[in-house]
Length: 153
Image (cartoon, rainbow, N blue to C red; front, top):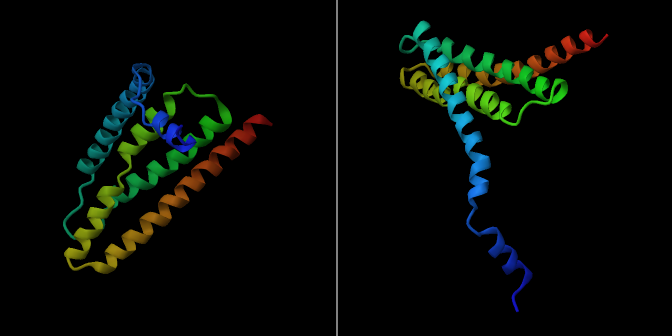
């Protein structure tokens, strides 16, 4: 006789079936495709607006702020307006916007500013990006809800 906990562990650790992979494969594929598109857009923006060594990384700052604003609008649209296909959120939210926004580059930019002897600028960038990104998500969702409310009248 085995304890109930042991049986539940055995059931949970069973290998995943082929049908589960078939349901997850399209999600993985659309996240990868969306991520590639978002990363290409971010790369194009960084080429169009390069950051000289030791200066404020405006391209990364605005990439993150714009991406966060779009996330706010997108979440309102797919939760309040229409029932999206199950692959829309992984493709656009996780893939495109996840590939477009770049908090890893943000961290590298902070390190570069500090190493270039500009710790004050690095700290301002650290706090400014965080505050602006959070405000952008909030403003994007508020603006989207206001537009939707006006349309429904």
